Structures are given as C-alpha cells and as structure tokens.
Length: 119
Image (cartoon, rainbow, N blue to C red):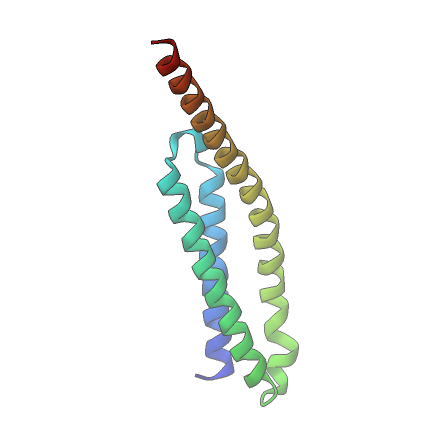
C-alpha cells in the first residue's frame, strides 16, 4: 500500500468517524437502548483503532515521499480536530445517559427490595 493510498484510507476513516459523531448528536439519547449506545461506542472504538493503525503505517511510509510530509497531514489534521471536538461532545452526552440508566436501575432494585420487605 502506497503512502498516498494510506492517506486516502485515513481520510475515509475520519469522514466515517465524523459522520457517526454528527449522527449521534441528532438523536434523542433517551430513545436509544443501552445496547444501541454500546454498539455505537464499539463502532467508534473500532474506527479509531483502524485510524491509529493506518497512521502508524503512514508514518513508516512517508519518509520515502517528501511531498507527503508537507501536503498530506494538513487536511487530515483539520478533520482530526473536528472529530476530537465532536468526540468530546458525544462522550459527555453518552456518559450522562449511561449514568441515568444506572441511577434508574439502582432505584428500581431499591424499590423492589422495599416492596418485597413490605409484603
């Protein structure tokens, strides 16, 4: 795989990460199940791992192409910054949602114990 192809793969992966992050912002998290949230998080984690792998691969290849050292990373850096901002936002929202589930689950267990004791 040539360094230019690796850059295209990195760019495509970043586009997918950004699309997913933007999509989750447009969804009412109250309507998502815990399974759906977990699936989203796992998908994003997988894409991030792929991105990191491709970045390492690119680093090893770019030394052979001086033009790539100058041009390629700038465009990708912009997308990385955008994804980083979106990731912080959706992580905060998802963590709040998960905490809400756990609180609700705790209260349900507490009520069930109280109900069983009272009967």
